[in-house]
Image (cartoon, rainbow, N blue to C red; front, side, top):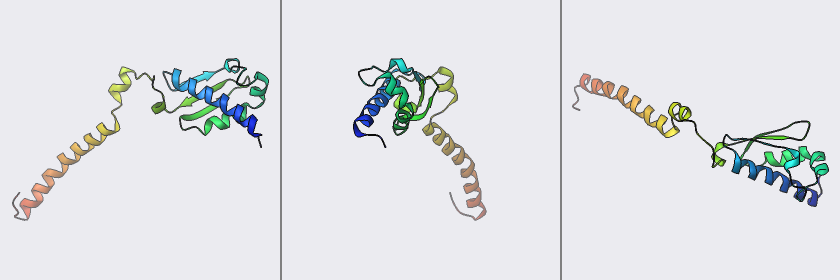
Amino acid sequence: MIANDLRETLEKAAALIIETSVRETLSGNWITYADEIPSEIISPELYKKHINDVVEIMNEHDAVADVTVSTDSTVDICLYLAYCPNYEHSEDEQDTKPTLVERLEEGKRKAAQHEKPEIINNNRKQGLRE
């Protein structure tokens, strides 16, 4: 178990990495090198010793999809795009991936086109008026 003051320090390091990643990423991915963590927040030695604890704390955050760590304590974070205000959509991506609402509306249109003739035909077969 981690002591409270150590946990607080590790949480500050994790928060800094997440906040920076969310603010700076254009793609939803961000790499943070160990030497980018200010020593005022955590010493490099302590950071490297507890990197797995920092990653565990980061994985608890809603914005974080995945975190990997390399042998030199470099953190590669993958974020959910909803949390990334600077995410840049490519023109191709916007053209080829309709939104959920657009897909639902298209599904409704297709369903209405296929169901309407059948309903009319069934009504005519039964001698009912439209």
